[in-house]
Image (cartoon, rainbow, N blue to C red; front, side, top):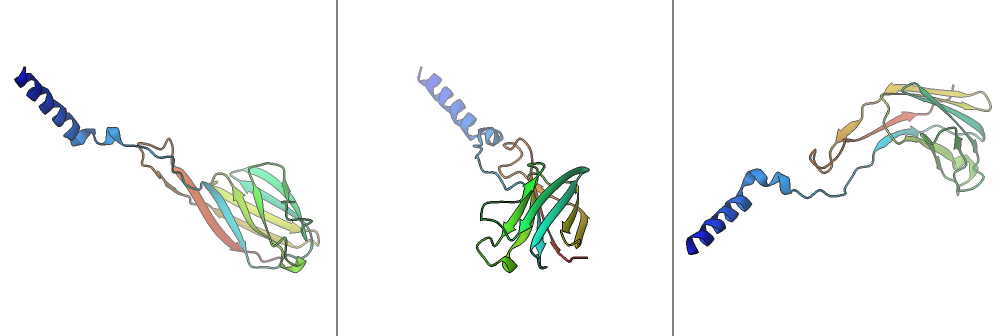
Length: 159
């Protein structure tokens, strides 16, 4: 009986100490990353008036409309899809300090085109390929898919 206990103890120690089993016992966390796409709209002045944003992402066209100055600090820009969010900045500031500072999407597209038209007829156009950064915050063994994000910036110059 004593030899049997020693033998079972040795097997248990070998089983626990086996490095090949270390990955199988890995604990996965709930950590994730900030997925999505952001186009920062830098510089430029945003005169008072109505704005129409037409965003084409991988062939999908989304239209948003907003107005400066903002009527309140609640988001007032409306889009025909919840796949786009227009960032509003400076709602508590004087009208000439308010702007639209960012276009956000929940997933990075492969290609983005943005047209912004002011009620005066002034126009801004941006178009580019998007190169997201992807990774597995918890490792490939834990995450069901890669977490991808991309941030780009452009200077707004009205034509």
